[in-house]
Image (cartoon, rainbow over all chains, first blue to last red; front, side, top):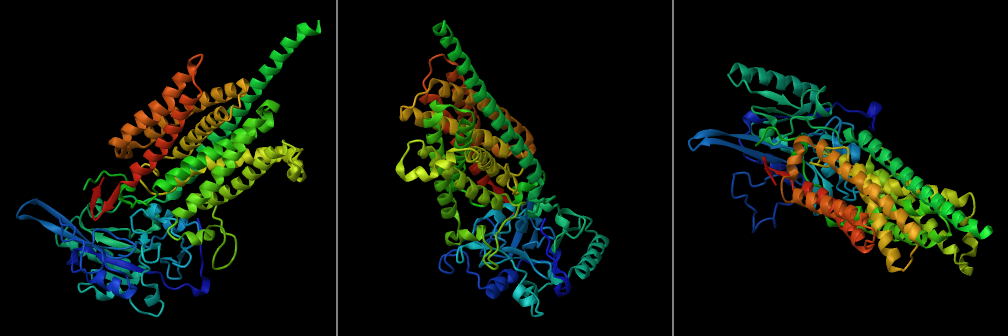
Length: 283
Length: 306
């Protein structure tokens, strides 16, 4: 509901195209992100690494200290039959960003590149954005005590550099560039995969007419979105604003009227009773 | 991974815990109390004055506690003022489409009107220090104070449910009914608080108690139906309540907090304390169930843990 226009200062819209079919789960993107953004390791940072104990995925989820996360989807219906789906997850930099919409301090802004960035010096850690994000991306960073997430390396792209994660990706699973160019490349890749027999290949978040006006960080998937931990139809939190407010206003009017009318009726009865009691005395 | 999960099940919990549950409970009581004080100021008689005073002070103390709870709950509490003033520009911070931003201003206005109500209730005693504030009890200021208090009280009581609905979390965002559920519950818990405190302070006006009990009965019935509509509107997301929280909702909130007080209050000579305590317990459990049943659901990696 808020719109920011940069006018002549606007830069070409940029984002990520993540081709999950070529991700090898090396986690170079996770490491590069942590190094560039000076993010701490999980746990105590060394001696006692936290292990999930159930997967090669020990990062488990995006957080305030982990802005890139390589998901390992393990599909093994039989012991010697199955596959890993790997996907480097990140903030989607939604064209209509739910986090930006609800932020009560104005800490979350849209940049001239059409990316979404949290200003750490403004955020007070109210956590409204965490519940609003449809992808579970945002979390509190326990060093700054503010909400944090991927900035799409705003500091790097501002000076013409590529984000650290895509720069480090050895298979080009993560590709950075202007959105229009990435969409063309992604569509061509889907066609190529389908020609090779992978009929399930499809793009998630590339459609500008899709949910949230499209995602500036979109993905090529070869299974249902839910399999990758992605919602099929991500939604804006404001969908409940008008109906919720109207219902509450209706309830408030009912309360005021019921309270006022019952009190008025009660007092009228008191007056009538008092008059009845006074009447014989007047005689 | 189930592919029929509602979209809200793929989000992360914001970590709204006990401080926020307490805020929703105390803020709701405070909001309802200022509504009751306002109604009694507009339509009441001299016999209602002690009730007005108690309700006004419940609202004022509730507003102060609410503010403290909200500030302490922030991850960076010293930056609480960023909610009302933009730290980069010094301009006022207000987003009408963000319930949290609106809620901050509602709480500020509520604090003002509850202070006015409390001061006005003190001027009734003819204290020399407060003589200068007697204008608050005269027209048109008395009516402005009462109506402003009613509006702010209702807003504080109801906005919290809308705030939860304007997220993407399971249960909260799967229905638009939370605001009205919280609103009715806030008013009923405020009446219970007023009945309890007036009983404790030995303020005993049979007529006012009778009105409070009648109004409470209507509110509890409305709250019951609002909860039913809320549950029906959840659709597939209601599966989040197929656990111990669902049991607490049915037994604690509906049976103990709504049905039992209604039954007890129908008896000719019933205790004031018992139904009021049950309503308060039900109101607290309602907020606890709504908050914690959603908070426990989070996507970790690609598995949904509950």
